[in-house]
Image (cartoon, rainbow, N blue to C red; front, top):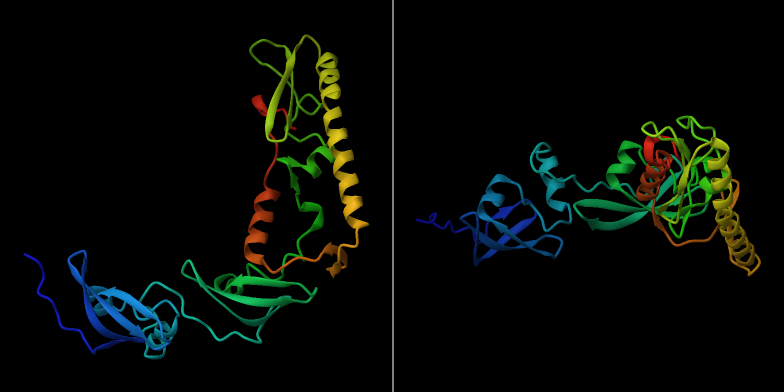
Length: 271
């Protein structure tokens, strides 16, 4: 037997005024159509309304009212703050950018001149303090056609490589030296050799593809720089002008890329 329907029409819950039942149910509870003080509309079950789990259409107005009434611990979504004009690190909050995925976002102006859209939680926690211009340029990675430009340009041997040659490791089972190369997201087997010198020579021959790729990449960048692309100053370094970016996403991606390394089979081959 279903639960007896409560008549909630006309009652208020946070910023919501209950209008009428929809005829639908969620987990056995009647779903009501509600009008929000912001002008929006929301569908909420009687249980969510009674428990204070749904208090607005998603605009955040109802959550703020709960906090003013001493109900800051109720509910699961953060309240919308009035942060226009506030500064967080190098970012000055310019205006509200809306709510997406349960998070509030703010348009911010960085000291370098760029704009960034940042989540309210990242501003509050201090996770995002710039548009990305303060990130260490030496730790930034750029991927083109599945290839890390910095990785193939440096040719640096990783600390875990015991052969001293990138992409070359010794097979413990056979005792032979194996060479391989990773390019554009794929690892290519170059062969198994009796000596380290032979394996290193095979690897050096294969690395010619790196040189050809870098030549094309550098030539394309030089052509772009000479075509009149607008530049702006960003932390003292020139950067292509770009539309507003999700700064928190940019920094999270940079943090992830800083922890990446190309590890070949056997734990010793890189690149």
